[in-house]
Length: 147
Image 1 (tube, rainbow, N blue to C red):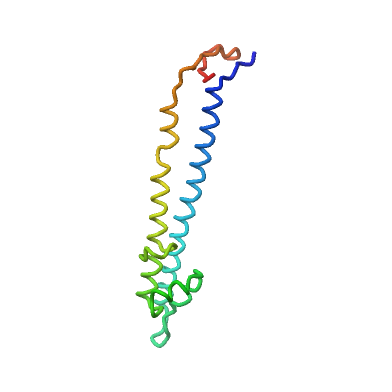
Image 2: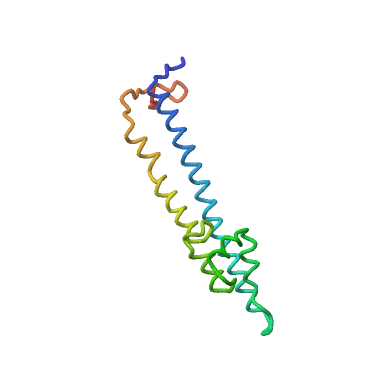
């Protein structure tokens, strides 16, 4: 015997699946921004380690670090020279630069704040007035379903 599904249950399933897809989307973007921040940190770390191996007469290479981001024009508008101080400031702490580590982490923080508790809040505020218990013939036990 197939149980009748109520409109309330269908409404719950529809909204829950929408909520879960929103949460999954948020988790995807959260991961992307954290990964972007991690990659920028890795660029800076590798460059700092390479500088340790440079001989005394060689120039430090900070320009390519900005170049690889594709935002050289944005960097040039704000800073005069691609030295260690300017490049690290730009890639790490510049809040006006959307791909800096600090900007990526702030966006990730906003995503968490916007997503936090949405699914559980929805489930706990949904009025479950039509809960029934159906006898599971195979196990002989009662299983609660929303119908």
